Length: 306
Ligand code: ATP
Image (cartoon, rainbow, N blue to C red):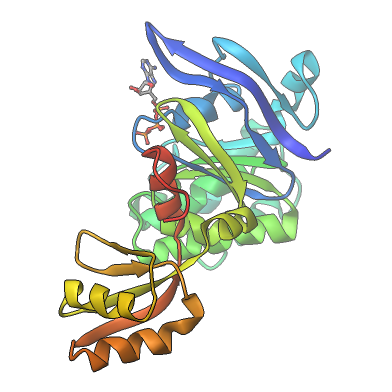
């Protein structure tokens, strides 16, 4: 089985609005799939459909290579965290997990302890109520709850939204461990693209309900390439100095920073030309085009190459 999840023309209509339109996406086994899109793009609607929480208006999907009735039975292998986790705030992480385990008929010895370990909560005070946890700890407990029943796939809607940098890093580590140590396939949505780029192996871009693009991290790297970023005290003078040494592909960012897309191995000559023109050079460095740049290029119908 190449894909854990595949959708064909998945569509959801609310009233007259097509919240999700004709989405055919592919989530490879054992990978972290990042679903990107701005607010209202349709990410939650897709996640609800593939988790069995909402029926598609049109289209279909397969899970673990199965469709129809066979697939329905496999929905229990999908763990879901959509919006904030439903926790009992007065109960501890242990108790919250234990209740879910009992409800789902999963109760082997040491199971809750293993779950706590999987989400990095094994060292929390056993008596501390979940309501007093940081947002990051609550999200990790939510992921722990989604893991009850040993799902092969996790669907996590905006799990890092609103977290501080430490909380984000802890959730990221938790996801990477689940992928690498337990082989769990994870679909995660976020609009914090820097963070998504650090954790995801492949990406789908959703815009106004449609899937505009789907690519792996390696493809992103190959497609988007690099550029030289230059910041000086005189943008026009810098452009002139660079053109004088044969640099052609120069574009200006709104903040006056220049992006050079040719002669990338020639930054020393660029720096020399700027300094020799008597211009104060503040910064010059080679940069990779970010996921955010790529996303903006795709959603705004602009260039893929920055
Ligand atoms: P966000 O990050 O804000 O949650 P999203 O990408 O998850 O955004 P969705 O929540 O899937 O977007 O919403 C997609 C569109 O469908 C939006 O225009 C939303 O208003 C609409 N929508 C979602 N759920 C319903 C519903 N139950 N009834 C009517 N319209 C809905």
